[in-house]
Length: 240
Image 1 (tube, rainbow, N blue to C red):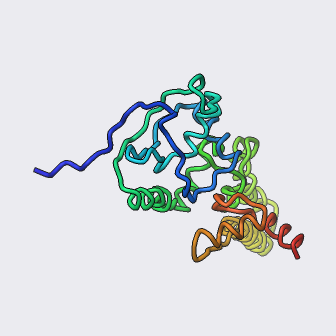
Image 2 (cartoon, rainbow, N blue to C red):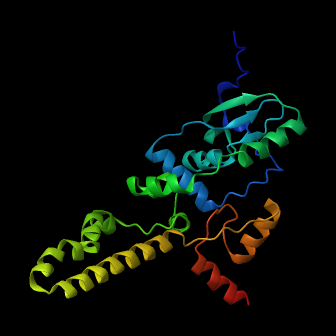
Image 3 (cartoon, rainbow, N blue to C red):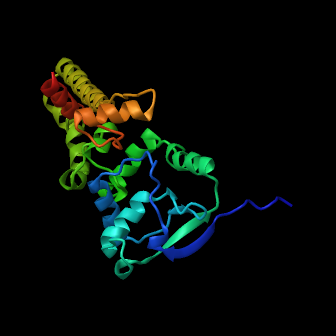
């Protein structure tokens, strides 16, 4: 029989028992915290706060607690104290710091192709995505385009559907030329659409600190994983 994995203990504690880790390297902007709270209100607080009972420090979930602090108007006083569900571990200081980083850096990368197929089926903003993400995945999507996607496809292939009518009115030689032109037009349109899907480039850094310094210098949230190229180009021109 396989030995059962060790599990954290789920416990409800007072907010006043929680301390933000002073070394926490994750930089949460005010907007990202507000977005987290918005999702809590829309769906629910589904946990994800990991707390070290030995030190009282958060290991993971700083942004989740910040969002609830706003909701409950917590100011550190007993009058504003509230209860919160946490996953409890008991770790020494070194292991706590290691786990703080691990919980962020170990998160899986998303499959680009699967994301391109998935985004048109969802409300991307409710999934925590923004225009930078859409740009990265080569997607230009709004409500009107979504509703008219079938019409767009029909329009693209309209020359093919009209070909029989054309064939009735022109000579054999003209017919061959029209067919050739139609095929060429469809191929060019398809190539252009394929290029748009590949309209992104990956920028990498040796470590988080280098990325953070670059993002702050350019005026972006260090947590952003995608930046619209045109926006970055404008920022570079201003700095230059």
